[in-house]
Image (cartoon, rainbow, N blue to C red; front, top):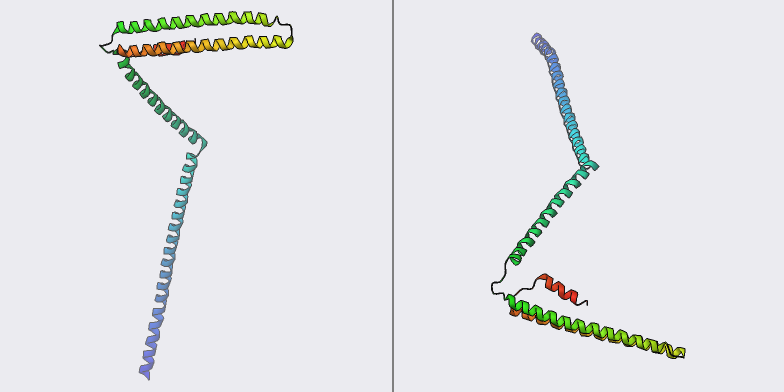
Amino acid sequence: MNKFVATSMAAALSLAVALPAFAEESSSSSSTSSSSSSVSSSSSSSSVSSSSASDQASSSMSKSADSPLMMKQKMRVNQRSNGMMEAHKEAKKEAKKEKGMEPRMNTEKKSVDIACVQAGVAKREAALLVAVNASFTARISAMTTRAVDLNSAWGQAGMKTREAAIKAAHTAFKTSMKTTAMTLKTAHNTAWKTFKTDAKTCKVSLPAAESDAEKSDAQM
């Protein structure tokens, strides 16, 4: 009996000593857990703040890039770049033109017969002179005839007869002038066609001035 009591008292004493130690360890563990949670919360808050700051900086840079001033500067840069490209293209075109014109201006076939060309030009000009002279003669004749016919028409007594005679005089004049113009055009075309054939025989390339003269002569 005494032995049982002694054992019970020893167990009670051991429990009394162990309880404070267990309480202290629990308190320490809780404190450590709280500290860890605080650090984690602080780290998360710092990460959120950093992400927010990064987003703000990115948004600020995007707004700055899209600002009217930046857009104007970009447009000016693009316009200058396009202008330089166009100028470069034009310069290349001009260089090609000059390069292509040089051989034509500075070279000539050695077999060109100058006397042959001169004879062809003389024949052409003589034919045109005859055609133009005939055309002017025909126009003068037509105008002279119209003057006589109109004088006679206006001398008619009746109004209807007079108006019919006047109309007939003008109609005859227009027909005569039209025929004269067609005759001159035909002579012009024939003279120039013959000359071009002669120029090929002479082995010569006609300059642009000759082509211009052919077009202007057609307006006579």
